[in-house]
View 1 (cartoon, rainbow, N blue to C red):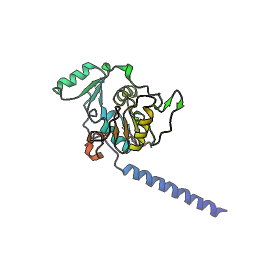
View 2: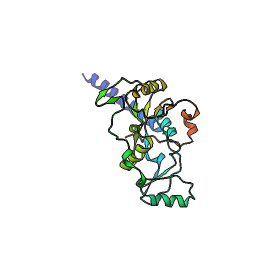
View 3: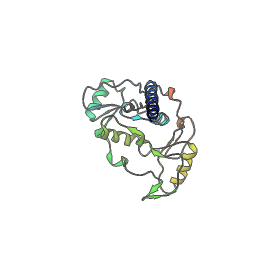
View 4: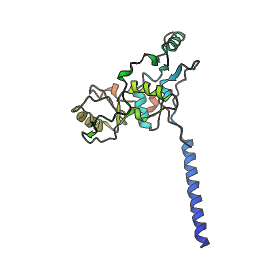
Length: 222
């Protein structure tokens, strides 16, 4: 009867109310932002700083990938060596620059290649810890093709997994069949492509120690 439909309407209104509240909470939550000052783009030949070219959804992945690329985050990417040289000159050589016309493209990773535990369409072992290529966690707001070149070069086939146990297991199995790339973990560990792990150089510091040199989070889709 009439009663039922009123209850239903109230229920739907309550659900909508809840959804709106949740969305407002999300909006209020401080979004991870990169606080590196941007490089003023005078010409279309300047893409901007590496830290500003990509965004990462997941906080822990953002932290470890930002730290892994720490020495590159401040680097300004340009399309041409001429533009890079102009920035070098006007900063007395203090600003790192990376011109895309000077990249050797034959060694860039193939973004469609499967993770190394698959060979010729066959699963060689069952990994744990959710391995993914680090590059697959990046989203590029602009200049997608140029950014794929930049981050393909910087990250190569670097893989991120949940923790060190998963990464150690993954590496031990991968090296039976092929070369193992650098492994990062969402807990902040790094196993280098030569197998070395541990020590201060291979442990990401807490997010606040990265001094804002972190990839921002994508703007939530409306």
